[in-house]
Amino acid sequence: HSLTMAKRDFSEISDTCSWESPDYEPWFPVSEKSNPLTRDIDKASPNHIVRLLAACDAQMFQTDTGTIYQRLFSDSVVRTMLEVARTVEQILRDPEDSLIVLSGCGTSGRLAFLIASRFNRSLRDRQQTTVYSYIIAGGDRALLTSQEASEDDPKLGILTLEKLCEGKRHVLFIGISCGLSAPFVAGQLDFCLKHPDIYTPVLVGFNPVTQAREETMPGYSLTFREVVQRMEEQRGQRAFIINPAVGPEAISGSSRMKGGSATKILLESVLAAAHTAAFTNTHVTRRVLLDMMRGYERVYSVTYSHSDQIATLLQTAGLSLQCGGRVCYLSWGSLGLVGLIDASECIPTFGADYEDIRGFTSGGYQDMDNIEGDLTSLGSQFCVAHEDFVSLVLPTLSDRDTVLLLYTCHDDVGEVEKMAHRVREKTSNLHSLYHGLEGDSAADSIALLCSSVLNITWPSSSTVHMQWELSSKLVLNAVSTGSHVLKGKIYRNHMVDLQVTNSKLYHRAIHILQKLSDVSLTQCEEALLKAIYNVEQLPEDITSAGVTTHTLTASRRKRVVPLALVCLLIGCSLSEAESRLESHPVVRDAVEACLTSSQHLTSSPGDQTSTNQ
Ligand code: F6P
Image (cartoon, rainbow, N blue to C red; front, side, top):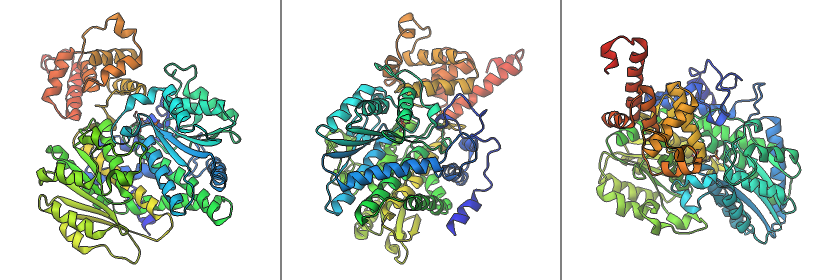
């Protein structure tokens, strides 16, 4: 029923120009293309934003349309997933000296952690040896904060992997890079290929191999694409590539959204199928795998069948951000990590302050089970337990702030209610997201304290926890993305004020500048460099320096892309661009004001009034 509802609801949203056409932004890989569906998301109402996000997410489950792109349910993809699941199954049957490592940068590393922890927990529950581990570029602090620079370092990737796997006889290495682009992961995959006696590499990403990144990697002789080509030579025996296309992200390049969801769907399906086989003494079958994936498709539909409630959440969160308030996710149990991850991504994605959208989980680090343990001593940003919320946030909470409770029927509802009362003393802006099972009912006492309630009911299944996580991820992604759209952080479907902290983001920034200003890439790069170094002329030592030097400098500067854009659009100096941005603190307004004045300049060159604008 909900599947039909979701399909009917979003049928009005369709793209007249398909991203799959070979002529559509041919210079970009799928993961960096702009989605034709969301071209005007920056002007959409909360309800429409949710519908656009739903339509974008639906592209994850689209079947093969006969283009060059293989999709989630394509035979070739399912076949490779099956092969990887069988390798996992073998390890589960004979785990001694074996390890399954999941590795990635940013969101991909966070999901590596989430998935590895979940499946280790499931092994522990069965009194089995744990076999999973994770690597995130930048170490555990990257689980909660942005450590983008490590993504560019292939050698660091290798060293971390080697250290983790010391003494192991067999390692199944799963490298996640949505864009087939992170040098950190490429180095690890290449290392695995060079040591086939121990390592079997699996690459998970969402571009065709021909769109893997071609840029040289610092201190390395190969590009990501060359590593992938070497994997292809070994494909199906000693190396596996799982790379369906899931369509461009709703906000261009924001792979935390569909990229993250598809990573979760793919890997959890593979691992859950392997666990089922190993512990029921059967073998992994295509049917079990497909059932799992279809289950996730239902999660998508069921979740978005609550679009109106999601829109309410997004609107209230947007209002909080617009008036300088905060948004807090207070989660219990397994939803804790989902909240922490979504909140932490807002810092690099939207240049948000860590206090803008913040996650807290009931058990704090005790429940997280991360390699480096309690990180609280690293600073307030790393305080993630409910006690921290009570001491750091609650005292100053007001109606300007939005608080969202996330819990399930497996959590201690009494505890949730207690917290709801404490929050309610400070703000009436309290909301809840609850996942229950068919047959049980949500606690009315909590609902009565909330100004909006989103209750989702699920049929019971052994994998329902993972479904709740995906459902919560979709809701929170919509809330955090939508509220930043409402705050004016997005222009069309581009995040213009991105932080230029690694080489992928450096090149993305240049392309955004080119798209919005319509001048050459060389001019855009020059404008970006001037903004990064805060100079009106580029001296030789800057133009000859490498991208790493540029991104290091950029990480200490603010608003470099909007600055460069204003300079390009108006042809003005950096100092003038700064003052224009100051008079338009909302990036979208600043861009629009400049575009209007640049159009006046070009359309009526003789008109004094327009040239003076
Ligand atoms: O460096 C920024 C970033 O785009 C993150 O937002 C993202 O999660 C990470 O890179 C990893 O990207 P990928 O999965 O494509 O390697």
